[in-house]
Length: 99
Image (cartoon, rainbow, N blue to C red; front, side, top):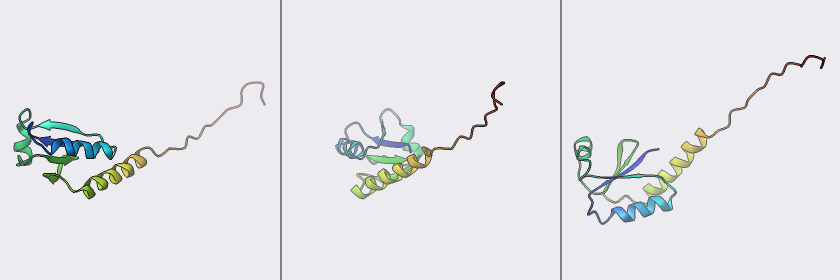
C-alpha cells in the first residue's frame, strides 16, 4: 500500500496526520504542493492535507481516526497475503552407492 500526504509546507494539520500514521505503523511519504505542483493538476485539489492511498484520494483535509484504523487493518491484510509461505517440494535422487 502506497500512502502519500500531499500538503502545503505551512499546513498545521500535516504533523498531526504524520503522527497518526506513525502510531498506526503505516509507512508514508510527504509531498509538498510547492515542490510538486503536478499534484494539484493530477488530483484537481489543493486542500491541505490530502491523504492519497494507492494513487486515489482517501481523505480531503484531516481524516477521521476511523479511516486511519481502516488503513492499518487493510495494510495488515495485504501484508499477510503477500507474506504467505509457499511450500517447497523437494525431489531427491539417491546418490551412487545409497541404493
